[in-house]
Image (cartoon, rainbow, N blue to C red):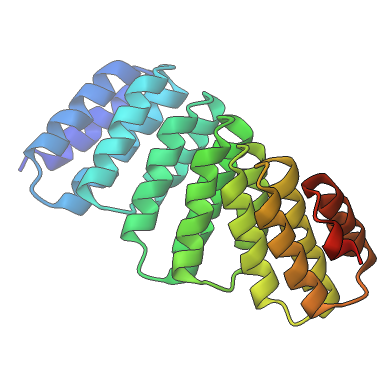
Length: 239
């Protein structure tokens, strides 16, 4: 019964640029409403007023978050929160938003899209490559042959100096590729990491021997094996 009067009052507030009373009126309407979609839309409108007319970005974030709580994945508020978090450099809040999107997504490709976003935030904005590596591994749990995810895993592991992880990631790509030379190069790199970063010379020898079995005349590995045999004093293997 009061809807026409409230609508007229709202229009009056807009004409007079009385944004704070308008936001209060809208909040009262939202709290009196039982329809979750209308309540979500109401919170989104309040958030828009708080951001654009009152300059209250924290309040805008709060109301958009409440809209998402009412209607998971509510597109206007999701997009607004994404923009607001980026604008304010709130990268952990952005990760949380994307994690919610991963949880709510029904399709694997959507989950993968947001997991890549999470990984890149951890790598580029938060300088936490270990967390990024975890995000990329979650992609591979969904799609084991996702080459971009494997490359991202390798990059993040190297940045985090997680050398055992890097060896595993290199071996994973080598196992999946059908290009013998590419496989040899990847396994050779794994051998280098075992030698130079982990100091496990025997494991490095075993790794390089696998390369020789795959590609007997692969010169980088033959040179590495020769060097390792010298350092280990395994003179008979040099013959």
